[in-house]
Length: 113
Length: 114
Image (cartoon, rainbow over all chains, first blue to last red; front, side, top):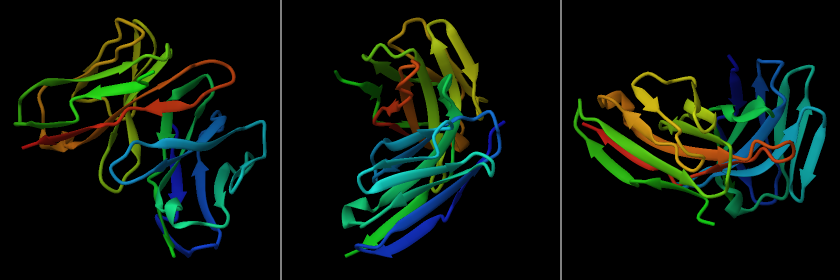
């Protein structure tokens, strides 16, 4: 089955700096890669996703890049703000069944004011 | 739309007891899933369904049963609760179409087994 590894497990940055979180996956059949943000005690919420036919996708301060050959994808957050502090999860699945997702173990991002 | 709803929000069980976690969605989504989240870990897939009457096992199915008799509901049954099943359980649904794959999560059920 699919295996997703996520690094780092914790990340602390100063407000205004950039943050990068990386994930690798094992199953070359996976072609849908979402990123979720989870605040303490809350449900995960999608912040950005990418399909394997696209190399990069951007939404304001958030971007995701995908390298299919190397089987890794990354989340980039620029101009970080204290409200970006949360746990971020990457996931991998096939678009034909996004309900069967494999998640990374999460990255706790702390943005210091 | 209420989105994805889960009941109860909190539950304490004794070892060996059984119970059903309820999940419902009103978005007419085909796909529904159950995940568990243990401290410091990501979400692990328990069971999933691609439509009414169709279910399949995920990564950690042992000790859990599911059924999907309607599009809206996807209950998760714990057959004989064990302390190892102490976790937060999230239900999720997604459209299953060709352009929108987003999973919408419920608020979660925090289960403690003593």
